[in-house]
Length: 413
Image: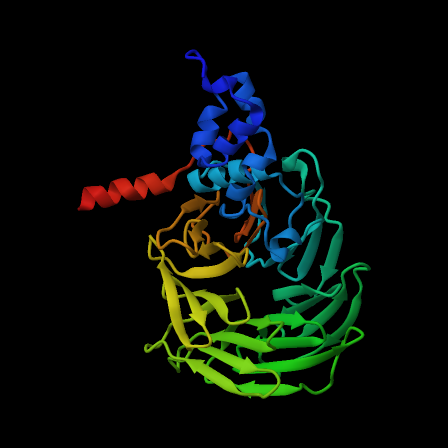
């Protein structure tokens, strides 16, 4: 071997084999060394293995692919994932004059959000990201008689639960009302949470009832298939489509078993006891047929396994704030919207330490009522605004609060 042989003189095949063994931070440094290394770093082969394990941006889940506006290359996945970790993002805020408790659903080409008695649909336009949503001109406006608590988009239908106790079925494509069931949970009960899978609709109310409805051609059955009475108001629910299991959470005021599993086939009910009263469950997200996530008024994001009927992992909020909503890619990443300062907390299910905090711009200390994301954007519903965080930029300002936590902990110790 010639004594003056340098690393840059090696054949491309040898360099690629070496680069595949390096971590992403080292690869980024090598790309700044010379033109040849920079050009080699543009090859996706080097980044593919790294891209499968990155947080948020891996795009391995069908859940994330269905709401991603574009499919990222392996190198872009690694780059944008670093932005998520260090809090490097730009923000666009769409404000309103009236305070609401919005709920949102994100799709690949459309964003749905509730504002009072209106349910609005915005097309996600490609191009300059700050003009992605035309806030003043929604593509679809669905008017309700009463405020919308929550809604779900399922099989080209939009199913909404309202404050007056009605359940409305809308056509997603045509934007027309297919059917409406008045006072579905009684004369004075509202529909606080709702979910749907295939031809099944499950609704929960503050009237302490969980009802399972049959949906045929956009019309709910006259009589519910199941009617479950609980000791507390129901605040959240989620259906696991493969096991036909409903997980519902209550406010926990009269019973310490504020988390329950209901089998749609057998009708069996299983209770998860928290041991204390007042642990309200704000949101539930299934990860698999056996595991699911919850957040609530105990300031903890919990991972439950129904096979052992207990919590198997937990993540305590660093600021001890209540959790209002969850969003997950069903692999590694969990976003939790909290009760104060428009803060969204990012967790990695493979770690016990929080990854990062994102503080959305807000006039006052607003909770994050709803949150969803794809690899490039976070959409957060606050009381007076919809906040969009863009992590795909290369020159965004860093807002790394994880470093601040470490300094504060070191100072306290």
